[in-house]
Amino acid sequence: MSKKILMLLNAPYPSDIRVKKESDALISAGFEVYLLCLRKKGEVYNQEFEGIKVIRIDAGKNNYVLAFWDVIMSILIVHPRFLKAARKILIGENISIAHIHDLPLAGTALKLKKELGTKMVVDFHENYPEALKTWFKWKKNPIARLKNYLFMNPQRWTEFEKRASDQADAIIAVVDEMKVRITIGYNINPDKITVVTNTEDKGFVRQKLDQSVYQILNGKFILTYSGGIGPHRGVDTAIEGMKYLVDYKDIQLAIVGFGSKSVMDSLHALANKLELKNIHFFGYQPFSKFYSYMHLADVNVIPHKSNGHTDNTVPHKLFQGMMAAKPLLVSTSAPLKRLVDQYNAGLVFSAGDSKDFASKVLTLYQNKELRDELGENGRRASMEGSLNWETTQHSLIQLYNSLLN
Image (cartoon, rainbow, N blue to C red):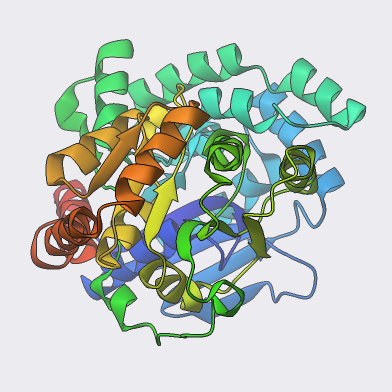
C-alpha cells in the first residue's frame, strides 16, 4: 500500500501551524502528503510547498463566500467542491487515507469513505460544536448573527460529531481532555483515539532574539499575551485585571496578536472605558518574533475562559511559553491548569476572575526567585522532557504506520 495521505483543510495554507507540524512529521517519516485547501486571491492552484503537495480550490476568497459555503456545508454536511476535488485526487493518485482537519469536512470524508473505501482519520483540533457558541458571541453584524442562528446550530453539529467519531477509522484528539470527552460522551473505544497535542518544536528557541520588541516598555515588568485573540481567549479578563494594578506603575500588559475587528474593537473599548494606561496593543507580529516576545517578557499569560471549547483544547503558546523559560500565568481552563500544575511551570487563577488574575500577578511580581524557579521548570519539561514536538510526533507516525499495515 502506498504511503500517501490526503489532508483536507477548510482554510488557506500556509497558515495553520498544527497542519504544518503534522505534515512535516509525516513527510520526514517517508509519507507523501497531499493537502486540499482553500485558495486566497492571487495564489496558485497547485504548488509543492515545503514538501507538501498543495492543491487549492476556490470556495472562500472573502467572508461572504465563506459564509455561503458554511451554510451549504451545514445543510448538506458535505462540501460539494471539496468532495469533487478530493475524489479526483484520491483516485488519480491512488491514495487510501484521508486526514480531515476538524469536524466541518468530516461529512465530505464520510461520503468518500462510502464511495471509495477510503480510510478516514478525523483530527479534532477543538470541540467544534462548543467553539461555535464561543466564536459568535461577540459578532455584531445582524446578518452574520442570523446566519449563525439558523444554520450553525451547535446541537446539530454535536450529533454529527458523534456520527463522525463512530464511523472514522481513527480519531486524533488535541488533548487528553478531548479524548475523555469523546470516549465517555460517544461511547468510543479509547484505543481508537490518539492524542497528538500542540507541543512546539525545540527549534522555537533558535529564533533570532530581537531585543527591541519591547522598546517602549524598557525597564517595565511585562505581562505578555501572544497569539490569536477571540472571545474565548479571556484577554478581556486580563485587561479588567489590570485595573487592580494601576498603583504599580511598572506592571504593564502587552497584547501581541490580533483577532477579528469586532473582537479587537471590544477590547480597545474596554481598555478605554476603564481608562487604563498600562495596556499596550502590539497587533499582528510574525511568528519569527514570538520567542523574543515570550523570552523577554517577565510572565506569559494565557487567560482562557473555561467552557466546553477551551476545556478540550490547548494552545501552542503554552508549550512555547515553557520553552521561553518564563513563568506562565494561566486560567483554570482544564488542560492549562493540569499541565501547569503537573510541571509546576506557573500559577493558576480562577478563569474569568479579574481580581484573582491581578492577585496572582502580584505574587509573581513580588517574588523573582519564584519566577525563576517556575520558568526553569517549564524549560526543563519542554526542552529536556517530553513536552516537545520531537516527542509528540511519534504518536502520529505510529498511528499512520498501523493504519497502512
